[in-house]
Length: 281
Length: 186
Image 1 (tube, one colour):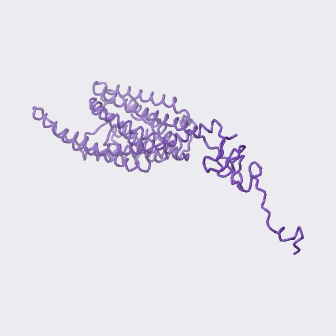
Image 2 (spheres, chains in turn cyan, blue):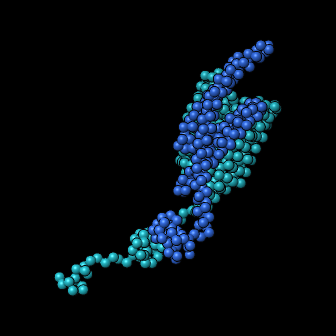
Image 3 (cartoon, chains in turn orange, green):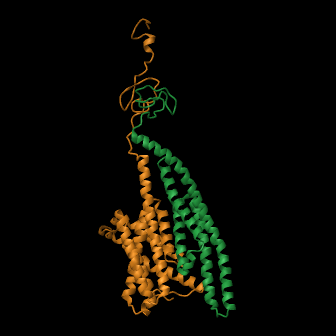
């Protein structure tokens, strides 16, 4: 090897340091620069596709909006509790108990429907006609499961009331004594709770809570709220489990209609048993 | 154009026309929106610690409620017993079966709620948001139940009830905010 050869000499064999350029903006980088002074990209790294990250101010705004929605959900629950409380005060003070019941149901229905249109416009989609056609299988499950579920619930209530020597409570008793027929009982005890309670719990509360927490947690919170709103600690456990079943139906069918059907069928079996004694106890 | 001579993060020397530090990549020239966002992040980091504290307080309130309901059960039992004795001494005829029913209902409800709140306390350790929300809704409903039975119950211990409600509402709100801030790496 000739030391004077400019091409093949030992000096010319030493590696030449490559010119550093930013792979994003193509500007030259000094050898000691670890980051580009123009765009901040790390030297030698290719630009990564920019993910649209919300800014801290946008995050704060979203949190504030979510908290506002959460407060509205709690207010709806408080309204439902308050109507129960006021209803029971008027109920104890009058002999027109059934009329009081009708009136409080009307207040509850108005509150839930108004809330739905005022604060939850996006979940009106849940009640669209398209959701009515969610598959025949989604209706078959509540249809088939209604009888065994009612039987289990009825025997639990029977066992608790007889073990603790509590009075049997008949939902339909007051209606028939006041002269109302089966149709009034059907609307007041089956239809209204099935539609309005499902709107409130599986529709408004559970659907909105899924934005705040996981599906299971939203299901548990909604079911606990549903159970306690019936104002009966004796019935709390089975109402909680019933709420879990209805909430599961709502998640599985992605529609409000199967839980409405399930709730309606359950309450229908209650009044049929009270009216016609379809079960042995 | 930055007036800094050294990077505020790594101390690297900065030339006048540089927008980013060549040592650590920190942006040196911030737009007004970026300055606002940076200030917001600082505020949110401070508030995150406050939220953490409120979540802990909420969990404590749930435990306090569990203890109150647990202690309340024998108190309710003895109160009802003394009420029955008092009425009996005044000459009233007491339906013993009915009286027993009422006692079982009230005492049983107290014990059951104590159990539920203990469960919620454990749940709040991993999932503070749903646990606090459930505790709040249950507490509001039990206030409603006691008011439905006896309206005078609504004003008994009103201050404590209001404090509990406020603590639980703060816990619910803070649990959610803390979770969101953590997810956003703030």
